[in-house]
Image (tube, rainbow, N blue to C red; front, side, top):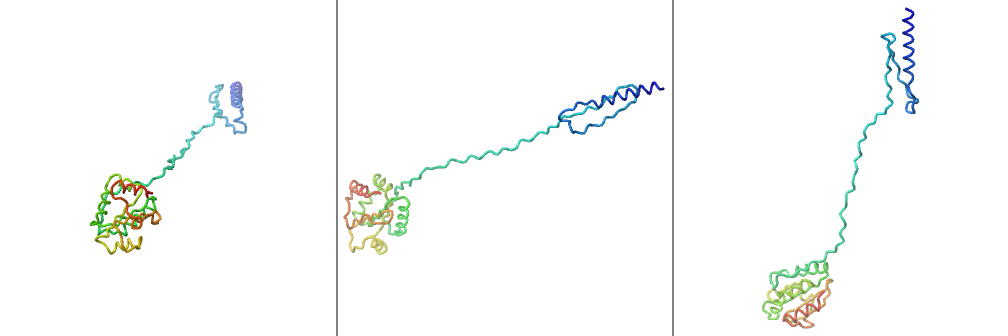
Amino acid sequence: MRQAISVFTAAATFVLAAGCASPVTASTVGAAQPSVSVTASVAGAPTTAPAVSNATTQHPTSPRATKRPTARPAASHRTTQPASSVPTSFGYSPSANAQAQIDAARAAARADGKEVLLDFGATWCGNCVAMDEDFRTSQVRAVLGASYHLVQIDIGDNVDANMRILGRYDAASNFALPVIIILSPSGTIRVDTNKTGNPAFDQAGFLAFLKKWAA
């Protein structure tokens, strides 16, 4: 009986000594050591102590969303040039609102730097008809579109209202038709053919006149 107790005691002492012999590393200094549980169900049977895990659990980190800067469109430095508005209709209309047409032409001239060409005429005037035919040729239309805003004003049928308009530019009492008034973009009178005389009404002569005063 004493011998059996001695064996049991020796075995227990060995297991305790073995269980305390855990290596000390930098990660375990100051850390609480796990308690050792010893079970001796069978005298002399070796008892295995639970292994101490010093591994640090790594949690995967979710990558942060990276915001990419939105590319800005390149600034455009193109300068828009005024389009060449080639006239497509000609003639003297007694029903037209001449003053509204003049106001629109002058506003356009202030915006694009072209000149305003006022043509006061009548359908029964031979020189007016000849000049109207010049307006319809491709060469004259090209110069008009590039340099002028044309307004044709009837003073043959709509005499009273449109003669008052003409009187604002020329106070004369007698006129040789047609009367051509050329205004600068600011509204200054550059040409008054009632004072300077009319140009030749063939295509070459009228084209030279337009080019001379072109903006």
